[in-house]
Image (cartoon, rainbow, N blue to C red; front, side, top):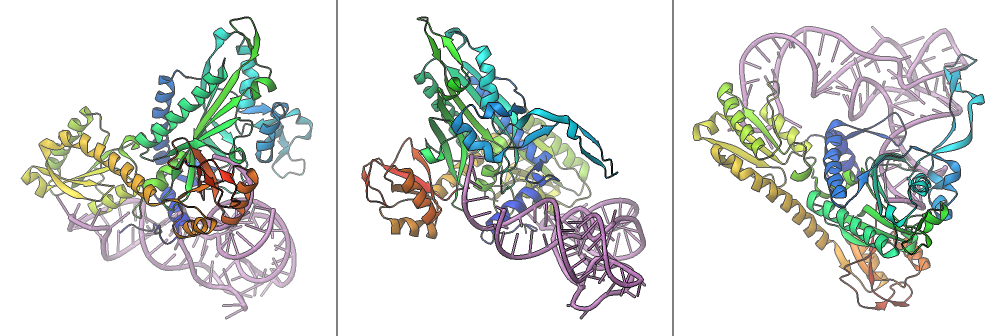
Length: 489
RNA sequence: CGGGAUGUAGCGCAGCCCGGUAGCGCGCUUCGUUCGGGACGAAGAGGCCGCAGGUUCAAAUCCUGUCAUCCCGACCA
């Protein structure tokens, strides 16, 4: 049935690439590691953006925009931060081209060398905190709650569409607070926003937790994360929220005068999600027939396919349904392309992941009904035309809920708890997924386990289902609680 | 950056060993018949064989270099 999509069981990576390409989400570009996000893919990203942006605004944030370029010197102000990003920065060294004197097109004009190189932002903490110094003087200026939608560049060794591209789109929130407690509360709040977005809109269950020192954001005191599980039983870090302490305030000398007239460094957070979420969305729900988009993020929620014989009457019935659905706030497309046959359209819309398809033919009209096909289960049923508008909001909600439940069940089946290294390895090799295990809390052990098994500590869960103390699976040293391991993207 | 593979029509590929008029399927265009799960017939259009050098009377084919992409590792959202 599905044409040319590699089966998941056969080659998961290939399946993923097939979905991205065949569903028209993105393409490779002429630039290494950079992709073209095509209209079908961008429309989904816009839905994500729209919802996230609302949630940020609802929690008191405003949007702003900071430069793409960062003076090189800024990067060296926070020691850990440079360390983390230095190896993957694109650097601008010149500002002019000229005709090649040898006639071979165009070359960099050596006389146009920049005095200080500019870094294409891999993240904007430094340029933003350099700006915040001027914006913050008094406790009355706090909290400062700003978000920016932007592109960033990280020169990655190996890229994969959406999951890891050299340039990607994201949002980064950067906030400044008067107290440590307030900043931590902000960090946690935004983690909750991400988790809520992932679960309610993407229908992608996530585990909230804290990263270990090894996995922490460069320059953060604590990194919180939401971790999702993909269909190949590998974990995906889907969003992070960092408590930055006073590191950046100190590096960029950002202070405020408190109510009791003391000059103090401010406390910071930063948090972000990226187009990687698109990868997570694909790998959580889609199947061998193509993309599956949860109704809440589907640019088109319902497509109507006419099965033509007497076309005018079908158009009439379709128009009626379209009006009724639009009144309910449902996005509908009427596929009137006369050149394609119905069977082709069915497959096409399944490939693109439209949640519900309505089919109307002569047979249906005679019975006053339409055929309803849902993308998630492939089930088909018939429904009275007059009842469509009442039924569809519920159906879309059911599909949304079903996708979430399905992902939740999958995660439950692929979550284990082990007590020994042998068991740990066996579970990872047999079925993968999330594995809870005791760890002695040291970086050395974490690194060693990674070397031995390729599994990393995804997080120390906030609502830990395995909080009891025990012994580290590698060293036998005391462990306060089990932590969450997985092989990850 | 290491290991493997691949660049030939929009997409998927054959041709390359053994140099000699660039092919197949899908898609595209036109017309007709079709239309309840990826229709059929007929007629068309579409290529600097990734790029640059070299060998040769002659290169998609042989040689050198280079660029890009994909997969597997190390690094990361």
